[in-house]
View 1 (tube, one colour):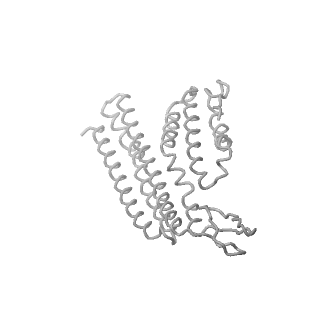
View 2: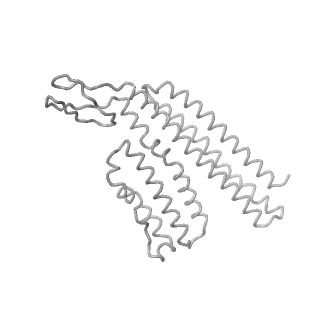
View 3: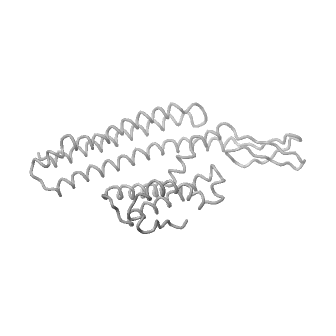
Length: 268
């Protein structure tokens, strides 16, 4: 069997095993979530996910390690040209990237599911709040933060969200926001990988693609996160600019195509 065919088989095995581990992990996580959705210690789930993440990363790393240790030389030894060698390497890189994305999305999916189930329980338990002075029932909006509730009697009652609702924010602020921006996140990662696949000096177009996909990601992510942190909705453009600034300073500034074009930042 040729090295190229053995490489195909190896990649198929890695992909299949990665999928099996993810499927098993998701099933175990859902079972655990069912037991803590209404409250309880969820930290064991984080430990469980960390172990799964390590196993998945090991599988992903095997792709690169096997290529360098065996496959690259074997393909060359069989007399294949650069086109065959490059195609095989790119095939491995593409699978590694896809598995990397799938692993990241699994972690987000599990924690977002826990947060949503806890939120459903917290909503079901939500009750009017008695006024601290007269005892009248005050309607408290669902919130992850403390609120001041005015009463017709003139008193102001401080309402604290229950522990279950607080845990929703602690668990779900990032995962739920990230899950809402999955499409934009995938596009952003694809643009970053495409840029890094080009040897410097790089032209402006792939740099701008990174910029635009990041802006789109932050716009969707922050819109979703404003559910937990309402202040993010006051000036969305400002929030996006704040998060883009490090990229402009640490990445774009070192791209020749970007600098030579006059550092053309997108208007946000």
